[in-house]
Length: 340
Image (cartoon, rainbow, N blue to C red; front, side, top):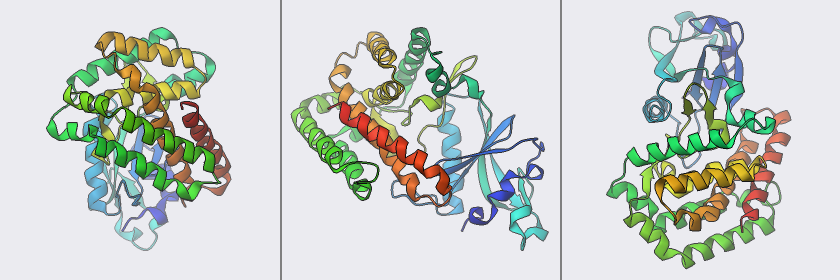
C-alpha cells in the first residue's frame, strides 16, 4: 500500500519540508515523482509494477531508494545525499492530504532519495538546443565514461548479460511490450522493419557478440545514459542510473555509448555524436564498437520510444500533457528506424 494516490498534493506544500522551500516544482516520470525545492530534490517512487520493475510495496521502494543512492555515487558522488523517510503526524490519519513530513520523525509511510538540486541551465538537454555543447565538452564526457567503464564491475555473472539469449530476450521484450501501441506511437511498418533488422543483425553477428563477452566488454554500466542525465557543473555529473533491474544496467559498453550518441542525433547534433564515439574509441582502442554502434542506437531509440509510450497509460500524468508525450514517443521510433 502506498500513500501516494492520496497525497501528491501534500508533497507540493512547503510545510511538508524541513527547509520550508518558497517554491516546489513537480516533475513526473513513469516510475517516480520528482520534487524540486531549490536547494534539494526529493525523488519518490510510484507504487507501480511495470513488469521490468516492481515498486508495489514500501519495503521494495525503500530497498530501491538505497540502490539508487549507492549506484549513482559512482558517477555523481556529491549530488546524492541520503534516503529519507516521509512520515505522517498522528492527527493526519484521516486527513492524509495535508500532514506529511519529509525527513520527519516517527514511522515512515514512504521514502525519498534526497539530492542536491543540480543547475537546470547546465543540463546537456538544455544546452544542446542552444548550441552550447562543444566538441571539448563531449570529449570530457567520453573521458569520464572511459574511466567509469574501466573500473566498473565485470564478472562472470555480469558477462552473462551479454549473451545472445539475453540480447534476444531484451529485444523481443521491447517488441512485445510495444504491440499495443501500434497505430498510436509506432506504425506497423516501423515495428516490423525494426524487428526484422534486429533479428537479422543478431544472427549475422553472433560471433561478434560472443567475442564482446570474452573480452570483458560487458560491465555494470549506467544504463540510462541520455542527455537529460548529464550536467556540466564544476565536474561532469552523470546521474539517474538504472537501479531497478540489473538486466538493464549490465550491458556492453558499446550499448552505453550508443545511447548518448543516439540522443545527440535526436537533438540534430550528429557531428557531436560522431565525436563522442570517435574520442571514446580512441581512448579505449575498442575498434569493434564501431560495428555495433548503429545496432545499439536503434535498440536504445526503440527503448526510449517504448518508455514514452508507457506514459500514455500513466494515471499520474495529466491528460493535457499526453499529446506532447505521444509526439516524443513517435520521434524516437522514427529515429530507431533511421538506423536501419
